[in-house]
Length: 429
Image 1 (cartoon, rainbow, N blue to C red):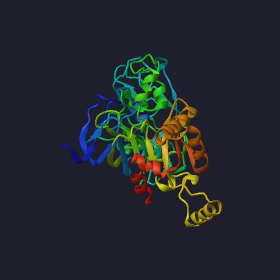
Image 2 (image 1 turned 30 degrees about the horizontal axis):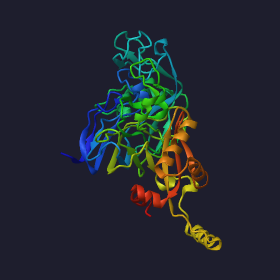
Image 3 (image 1 turned 90 degrees about the vertical axis):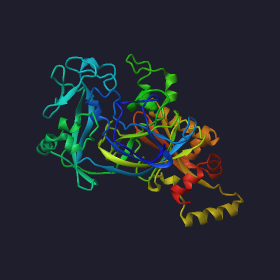
Image 4 (image 1 turned 135 degrees about the vertical axis):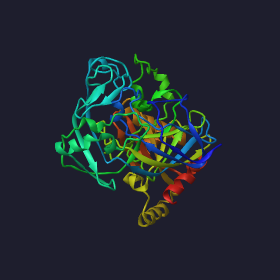
């Protein structure tokens, strides 16, 4: 029996796919409340988590079938961690030449997926239960620890003495959820950049639907998924298998409270999952990591029948639209109407929409986004290029290959696709 609200506080073991056990179903139009665990660093320091992240157990949506889409309205995103640690990484241990994220081995004894524990603090705080030595394949080239204010709006990076206090109780400091298996990254106690003031703008690095083939959750995207092509470990895939990803791992900082994400459905029920909440992130996530935090997200879902998306669409909050894709002021409308009358050219009625693209590099991701837009809207790729250039913009979600291509699309086509009502509601048209 479907439920109006589904509360999620359980997690996958790092993989996501058609065999994942789903909660729910939640009613079409219902709500999902998810207590999410930190993303990259904690799972990367926990070899028993095989997928590189720790995402919530997926929730089925009533009536969702392959070929449909699910509109996910992000009602709220609340950071619960008191603080976190992060930074740029390097990999250590010759045993991890394959892929230390999904084929993890203790760099000290070589045991695959060993159980671990936290012992003290510092770079070697994650210890292998087998050999008792350092079990973390990752360390910081440059790392920092941040503490947030009570309202989680501002943070400061800590010095060595303050980090020692934070890392003394790392699970509590990061508010690691009860059912999470990860080791808290604060245990590594980095303090390279003290005294910076950080402004929070939390968003979901992972949000979407279950892929059509089992993937490590961090690799459910065209860029990280490409790292699996031809791999010798058990998660190796063919290039053809990339068609099954749903780009649930986007790291796009506009996937925040107030936005609507429209995700493709590739398995019965869709399977909505979330994780990898970030406290803030500049475009591109150039350090490859940002401030991963625990948090609570409230989502509302709506099934869109037979939309046949190849990848996600985003309706960002209005202030996040690129300048050229924003709505005209009344004065600008009046000027345009005078030009229309002068030249006897009817004005196109249009509205902004963002297509997400991923690929093995940024060029491939850009082409992916444009081809998805071209196919759905029934226009050529060069036409999409022109619209992005003069009535839109291109933004990098994550290097190596996650982008959004935003532009104003014809309202007539949005209505034909059944998307206009969502767009109109999002922007009060």
